[in-house]
Image (tube, rainbow, N blue to C red; front, side, top):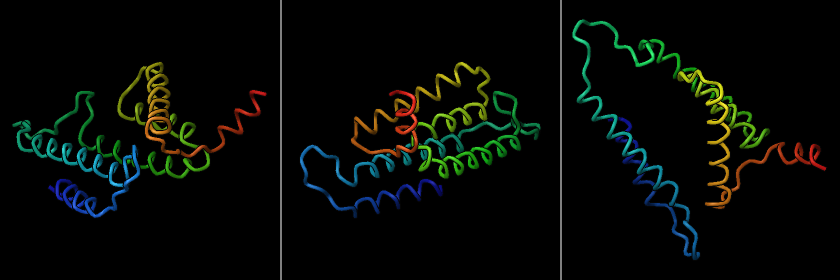
Length: 156
């Protein structure tokens, strides 16, 4: 319910953003509206899951498909938050690609992916796809960091 209320307040605040009249540009409220729609959809899904979820009758803690208990899931969330904070700290210096690839790899391993080839392909593929989408699809400049200088020293 809290997430649903937050999404509604966020959406209300989004309506107060100025509208740009430049042709062929999404304008300032575009991404906040996308965030609002996604947050509303996920909040409604979480609310529905909470209403119709089945709990074990014997009082034992419910395990996830990978066998983790509720306490393990809490620690995973804490570690994921720590990884996210570390990602935010290194993002300006390393740049989007060099910071995002290990961040996604850490999250994949943290949440149970054991196949290292899939971790490598997934983290590199998702990072590059997001970079291309935002940089060339939406014309959003992402932090470059040290990658251009590093490539300049490797490739003459």
